[in-house]
Image (cartoon, rainbow, N blue to C red):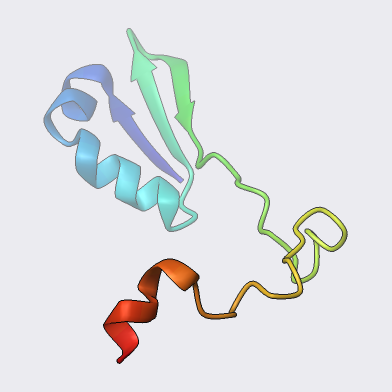
Length: 73
């Protein structure tokens, strides 16, 4: 766990954010009291197949388009 005061946090914010993203707990203190704890925002990971039934394709989605026929000759 890393404890830094507010002035140090201002100078090294990007380093502290990277440390928090790597899983280290970072605590910022103000006047000797814990003020802020940096933690990464957890994003839910998409699961394979989670859009099943939501996304559909037409049966002919890969059929040649009539508009492009002159370009294929």
